[in-house]
Length: 133
Image (cartoon, rainbow, N blue to C red; front, side, top):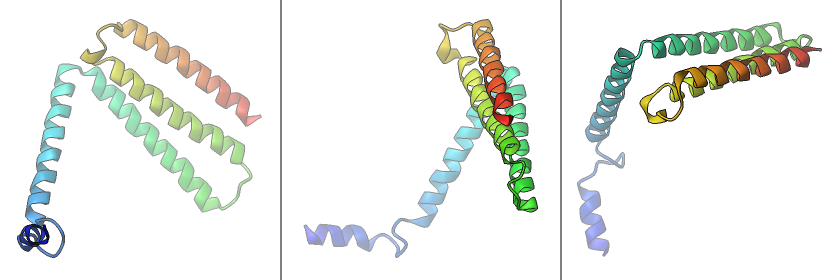
């Protein structure tokens, strides 16, 4: 048993796994992911709009966090929390809408998915506005 383990370990560099093999697998996984993402965008242009809005929400959340970090004061903390929770919640709702617009959710029409998204967004923003007070 020990000899078999020594033989297996003898072929592997000190880092644990062959570095070139891991790097090749990682780059191949990235290429496969990018090809699948590009294929999805070509089939449905609405996904590009949703992804752009998600990127904007991430940027707004980062700006809010940097603002709180720069001023080093917690005076507008309720407003910060409401804005940040609004960004995170809207991001989650957009990802849910994006998933429901794909072919895997054939039982849900795109109109129903969008209606649920609008209703959930209204509830989210209503709660965030009431959190400020």
